[in-house]
Length: 82
Image 1 (cartoon, one colour):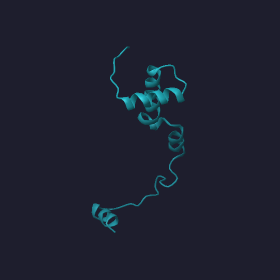
Image 2: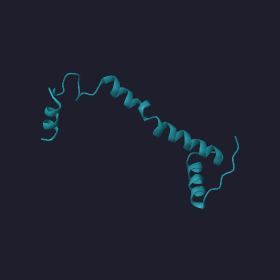
Image 3: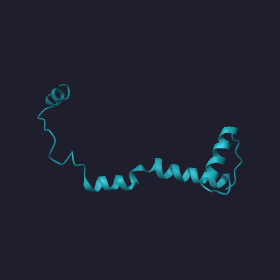
Image 4: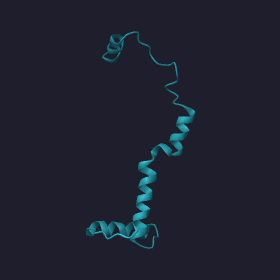
């Protein structure tokens, strides 16, 4: 897909710096690189290996049955408002 985009001078300079630092051929590759980076690091954090490991191992602090039990909502309120 081809698009025409108007960029400010500072955005264009930033894209050129990213292009040079990552040995990319053109601004199109640079924009694709940035979108992929954002997708991997911001949009899908739940798929990161450390998150998956944490879920598989379980949270060591909150094991099933280790919580405090309350008979009434009022007891819960008292506990929260200590």
